[in-house]
Amino acid sequence: MKDRHIKSKENISNIKSKNTKCVVSKRCGACSSLNIPYEKQLEDKEKMLKKLFDKKIKINHIIGMKNPYNYRNKVHAAFANNRGTVISGVYEMGTHKVVQVDNCLIEDKKAREIISTIRNLSKSFKIRIYDEDRRDGLLRHVLIRRGFKSGEIMVVLVVASLVFPSKNNFVKALLKAHPDITTIVLNENNKKTSMVLGDREKVIYGKGYIMDTLCSCIFKISPKSFYQVNPVQTEILYNKAINLLELKGTETVIDAYCGIGTMGIIASSKVKKVIGVELNGDAVKDAIFNSKLNKIQNARFFEGDAGDFMSDMAARGEKIDAVIMDPPRSGSTEKFIDSIAKIKPQKVVYVSCNPETLARDLKYFKRKGYKTSEIYPVDMFPHTLHSECVCLLTKK
Image (cartoon, rainbow, N blue to C red; front, side, top):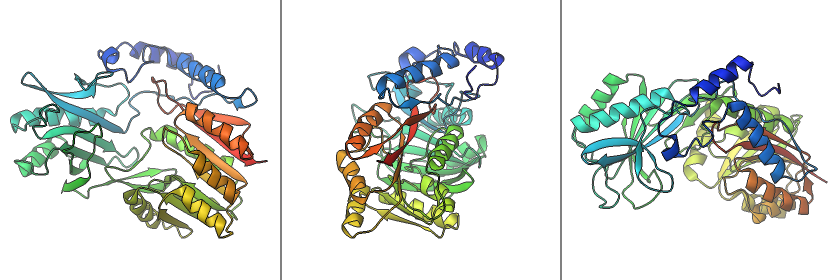
């Protein structure tokens, strides 16, 4: 059997036996591969990747999980009123109709317990559930983030107004049921939008953020922070990305799309200098905080467009040795890749959460003089069709 982090056939049979437990999988649609044995899921993902990429590029065996269940440490639940009954869960495929979810095979169990408690408390405290059509009510969503190694738990109550009746008593009741909750935040979202989180926040218990450890570095995670949802596989993915660069300690590296600085900070001990660039100002503040928290002396973080930042560096005649890039699902842009071509790093590590946009971008990179010979897939999202890939591009 191929080594995909699955120890034995016994493990696979146990995985098969779990697949029939989800009663809402057909309506939810999030776990479209739930009834397929996990080993077969991995094989199917490899086949899909081989069809997407140039035949000259080697697709390595996808790295799967030993236990591909309850891996999501970020859990979101939409709230709705169904004929007088408060329900919480996910939107049915292609609609904004909420499907009640009491147990999810891929989400953190503790997070689901907290969401169930909040649903029950909303009844006893007579908290009005938001109605999207009438734009009336208070509670819209609940977001839970849990530190995989720290165990710290953040509860974000997404509300139409920061005026929350019986707020103190509600907090007391929630903490009595779940004393391990670290912080509770109100997030105001009163707009007609598909976005979960709004712009205004109010901390009503704790610090307003949690801490967690990833690849031996500590990170502050705020409600809006981008932080990978599968910490076990994230360590594998990030270590692979950094190891591909074969760093010698003399390099200057740009961490583009740096978010809260995770990969740049993890790589900082192996390089001379890290420059992180990110458009989101709040994320940059967290990156600076995280850098100080980890006592990093050789990393600086800037708010701005990473492509423009590199173009400006190139215009000033400055040099860099490598770029780490982890763009959103939409992938990178030709403008961004052009900026890499201008500053001419010898190496680029591309971390992708969407193989289709990665395949598109690799073609444009090739036109700019960069090529890759291997793709390393990591199964970040078991029981779904998604996979994450990392590859090294080198200048011809």
